[in-house]
Image 1 (cartoon, rainbow, N blue to C red):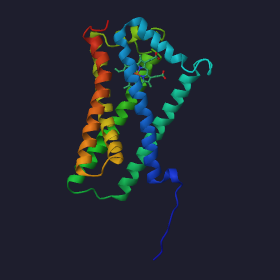
Image 2 (cartoon, rainbow, N blue to C red):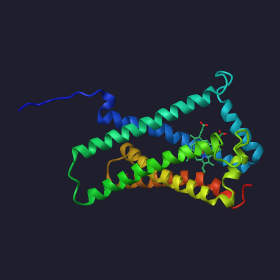
Image 3 (cartoon, rainbow, N blue to C red):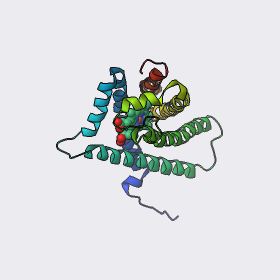
Image 4 (cartoon, rainbow, N blue to C red):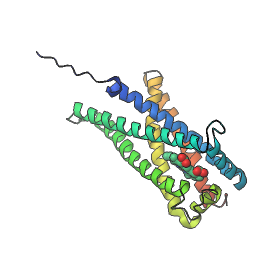
Length: 230
Ligand code: HEM
C-alpha cells in the first residue's frame, strides 16, 4: 500500500483555517458590538451624536496623524472580511469533497440549514455593507449625504416615507443575527463542556447574544420611523 502524505502549511490545514475563521469572526463581532453601542448615542441628541461621530475620526490623535486610525481600522476590517470568507469557502469545499454523497437523514437537515443560512446570509450581509457605506459613510445614496452631519443622515435615511430602507436594514440585520447565532454557538460550544447540557447552554447563550445585538441595531431605524428620534 502506498501512503501519500501531503503537508500543508499550518494556516492552510483545517485547524488553521478554523482558527482564522474564529480570529476574523471575533474582530468583526467586536466591531459590531462597538458600532451598535455607538449608534445608541443617537438617543442623546444631534449635537452629542455628531460630536461622537467626529471623535471617531480623531481616535489615535496626536500619536497618529490625520484620520490614520480610521484607515487602519478599515484595513483590518477588510482583511478580516476577506480572511473570513476565504476560510469559510475553503472549509466548505473540503467538507463537501470529503463527503460527496449527502447524508440520508437528520445530518442533512443540520448541514443544509447551516450552509444555507451562512452562505446566503453572508452574501446578504456583504451587499448590505456595500449599500451601507454608500449610504451613511460616503453619503451617495443618502437624501442628506453630508458626512459632517451623521445625525441628519440617519434621520433622513429612516424617514417614514423611506420605509423600504428600514425594511432592507431589518432584513440585513436579521441575516446578521442568524449568522452570529451560528458563529457564536460554534465558539461557545468549543469553549464550553462537550455535553448535551453544555450544548444547550451554548445554544441559549448564542441566541441571547444574537437577539441583543440585533435589537440594539434595529432600535435606531425604528425610533426614526416612529418619530421618537427626529
Ligand atoms: C441600523 C443599523 C446601523 C446604523 C444606524 C448605522 C450607522 C452608521 C453610521 C451613521 C455610520 C457613519 C459613521 C461616520 O462615518 O460618521 C456607519 C458606518 C459604518 N457602518 Fe454602520 N450602522 C448600522 C449597522 C451596521 C451594520 C449591521 C454593519 C456591519 C455589518 C455596519 C458597518 C459599518 C461600517 C463598516 C461603517 C464604516 C466605518 C468607516 O467609516 O470606516 N453598520 N454606520
